[in-house]
Length: 263
Image (cartoon, rainbow, N blue to C red; front, side):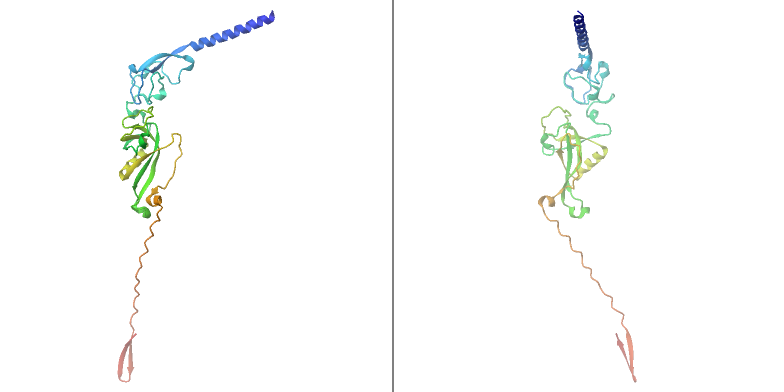
């Protein structure tokens, strides 16, 4: 009898625990989700937001339970329909809409003109990282590179913010566009502005998770074709003029005759 009582007690304990867990898992809370697809840089409005029941045990961190807290907030990342709206995907309060909402603090957005080749055949999409290559004439001050074409990577791991006027990062289809907007530091914007004024620019698509910088000397036409460097011009021969020694006059007297000799 005692053993049977213990078994029944254990069964009652397990049943109670299961009931408590089931009740806890059934508890829900209200969470704000996107009513429809929301593009990057869009300002949120009540029509874009829907409140749904969400299991309390798995509420996404940074989610909102009060739709009033989302009034006039700007999406920093694109949101899909039904996706919970989280703080990490929104620009700071007070941010105006548009592309400026996604530019990181301390960074600048700068647009450069490209074509189907320069734009990596349309594969440089928002969210990708690129290197910027400039082709220009060498600096005459460098002697052997003076007036010689040179290609050099001048900026590395630059984030693509938008292509043309489209900042959507969820579209993976290549698009041939005539302009690409890049996110740069103030120093990098100065370099890019100078680079596009002294030569032609190209974009080089790089691995998303490759943070390592590279160091190259640039490619010249001579190195590309394997041509020997032109021989240095011989130094000019300086003509040395020797100074003539001063003449010496000597008077020679023989008896009554007097003559003068010069040496």
